Length: 113
Image 1 (tube, rainbow, N blue to C red):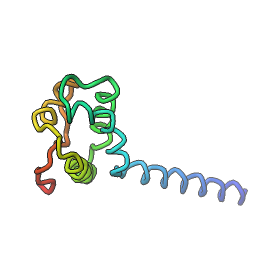
Image 2: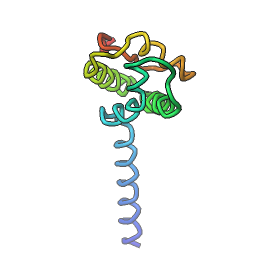
Image 3: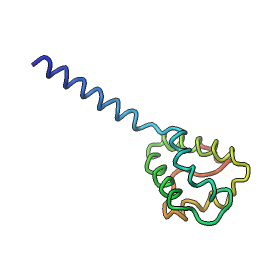
Image 4: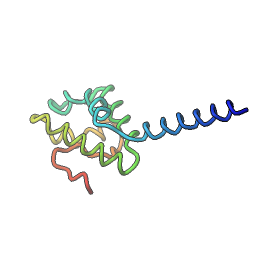
């Protein structure tokens, strides 16, 4: 009986850790989600399916205000790595992918607001 109680506590601890780890978005995740969009963001045209899939994933992962703020700062940093990023393409990306993105794609956005 004692072994079952210990096993139950271990399972609960693992589940709790998985929930905590899943909740925090990282710049690596943001970069991976937006990587398929680089050609669209720098050259224009139409975003591909992989790009729109990444944008939708990013949008789904950035639900809490902390995650949106983190994602915003990650997107801003990524945008600043591409000096030839087209601001009009960045602004049109969410609508071209058919979503309302809760994280702006901009080099100059204030992520604290």
